[in-house]
Amino acid sequence: MRSDNVKKGIPAAPNRSLFYALGYTREELERPLIGVVCSYNEIVPGHMNLDKIAEAVKAGVRAAGGTPVEFPAIAVCDGIAMGHVGMKYSLVTRDLIADSTEAMAMAHQFDGLVMIPNCDKNVPGLLMAAARVNIPTIFCSGGPMLAGRLNDGRRTCLSHMFEAVGGYYAGKLDGAGVEEYEENACPTCGSCSGMYTANSMNCLTEAIGMGLKGNGTIPAVWSARLRLAKHAGMQIMELVKRDIRPRDIMTESAFHNAETVDMALGCSTNTMLHLPAIAHECGIELDQDRSNEISSQTPNLCHLAPAGDTYMEDLEGAGGVHAVMAELDKKGLLDTSVMTCTGKTLGENLAGVVNRNPELIRPIENPYSPDGGIAVLKGNLAPEGCVVKRSAVAPEMMRHEGPARVFNSEEEAIEAIYAGRIAAGDVVVIRYEGPKGGPGMREMLNPTSAICGMGLGESVALITDGRFSGATRGASIGHVCPEAAQGGPIAFVEEGDRIAIDIPACKIELLVDGDTLAARKAAWTCPEPRIKTGYLARYAKLVTSAARGAVLE
Image (cartoon, rainbow, N blue to C red; front, side):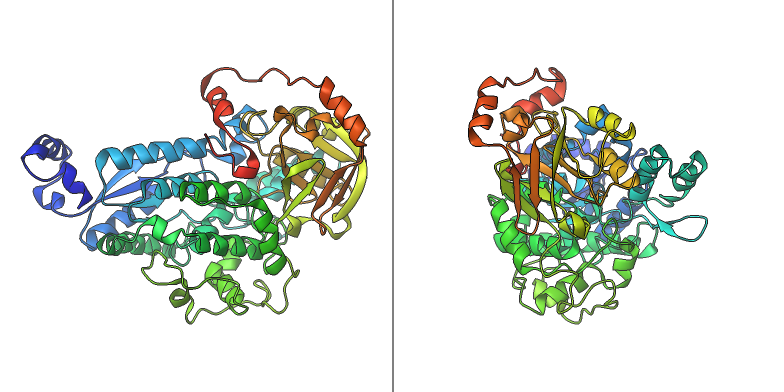
């Protein structure tokens, strides 16, 4: 066993003495040591139940003959961090989580790992760590929140809550109306109830083969989640026994499967940052252009919030991610020969899986659209690409041309939106919010929600070198690359310039001639960094383009 390095023989006697100080017995040290990476904390609603998940995982490990050893990972609540400097610290935690987990796993020589994440950057961070450490690993997430209900019985969620703020500033909702959303949008623990980033990544953990069936969809408050955790604890022992490792599972074909499921589900645009970063740790480079190829072949089968009015509990009732994969497999869109954490192939896992609700998971022959939920746009405004959640864009905004309204920070933009200075037809441009320029590539849920809440979601587009929450809907185009701080063309946009967006054609153009753009570039100087000390300053020096997943080099 790998853990023999800290358990066996006279040279390891000092190590054993420290295990004895922890209360471990000689019998426990004879068994494989399984690291249980638990992201429990008291600030993230999606993580407040993870101590219970960890206890269930540890029970499963012990039942199958292992010795569980728990240690923590951090997590940020993107919703609480939204709209202020705290959001600069969200994406950057992905690398802190990966680095610290690698350090713990290598320092203590575990034989296997069970990862217990839930919210936005915690899932990809731990997947990156799993690929990097490459010892047998399985994921058991905390599960999604149930949808809320307003006083009139309508279901609601966090994206409605953010849009309610925009409705208030537009005079469409009073303070009591906002308070009703406050009290009902988030009724239970768990990752927020729509197909936002956390749930997108938890679903893709199933699709890529690192989580058991139901990992992405069983609600946090259901006892089935505890049973899943026990089974994950048991299954890690099988993976250790057979020496099935993350890089045996997360192959190039597995990433192709994950991107295909991403398109079918209509996942968050943040997956376009996280999948390349995870693949990079596996020694695989994902090309954004490939994403459009996959999208062109993959029908969009689901419209969960914010694209529609159904929620994660409904997807679970319909058969979950495996039912979506079963639909995709009908047309041979997945490589079902890949190995998974069950110790079986994906094809074996899909045997007997049925779609229990064809209204929620559209049959492959009757999709919402013939192409996938995410599109990568390119053009002179974004030579390296930018990303939009196509499945959450109103039909009338699939093609749009309008004047640029230019802002150099999220704060400037939100002030203008709340003040009513944005009109139908405008294209809001928010720049210097990219990985380097932010630094940290903030999510822009506040401005996008304000636009929708004020009734402009079908007439105003928003473009940024920052990124968007999975709760964002509308013509919200993020990850513009190169970013403004790197001298990308978005830095040279001026107030009133015309911008043309053609989502079906995957194009975005700044309608300014090349000579004018060249003159603007020659006169441009990069603004001083907003943050010059601490972790964010180091991050800004190391981070790469969003087109590469904002990995560190």
